Image 1 (tube, helix red, strand yellow):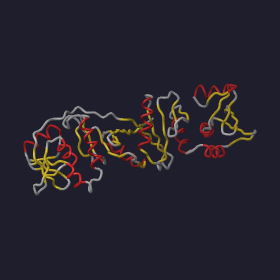
Image 2 (spheres, helix red, strand yellow):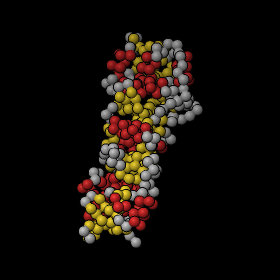
Image 3 (tube, one colour):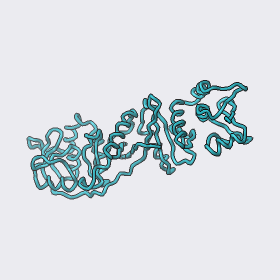
Image 4 (cartoon, helix red, strand yellow):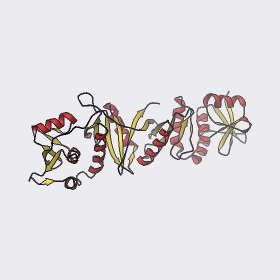
Length: 344
């Protein structure tokens, strides 16, 4: 026998004790109010009506699914996105409920092991807001889930977390050597110095008997007083000179250098991630002992992205057995925000 309920303004009330018990005790739907009645929010009511588990009346007139959906859509912002997420997770066995204590968190599960924000694929990820949310949730020792609704009504889920990325590689000391700037790379011709840099910390790539370095590697080694950089005309190039020369072609060079330097400090070996659509790939151990576990993409404070771009990055990382992290740079502070594919 179906449960009967009454629509009163923006809530749905169930009075029969047996029906209250079925929904509240078994399914964790609704909340108990005075008189031991059960109050459903409009999202719960639309879900139950759509599933054929409830009949709703107003002034003794039956309310159909279309009518209730229209009422709910007027009262609940982003109703269609929230409804799809609620329905999908409920049908997967997750007892989720609307969350109204934080603007950008939509749901929590009954056991409060995770919180979830739901978005349309047309919405934008705002990295600053997302970082604040995940930090707040992780302080409660909970997980942060994201549900992204595509235009066909299907949902893709991600979990988001702050990654304390670390490796086991140590920094080494080297004798100073000379290098030459060739447009967007720096070359060391000294064979012994090249071999040591490549062998110890995987710097650069062989160039004849020497070594070619990326610009970020060159800046790092120059700052460490390992290399001196000269032009092809044998003019000394300072760090400031180098940055001025490459800024037009690489306007994000300073941000990427901050992250490169931080990753090195954290014990990682860092190489370009261009083949994988990211700025860097990072190894926690020597490349002979492991593949790069991480792809790191550098973004600045205020970064915004479409969810389609995030989806591509996560899917590509997973397809090559790597984790993707966005390194958000805010002045000298760097947060590594990890996105992972989730199957709830």
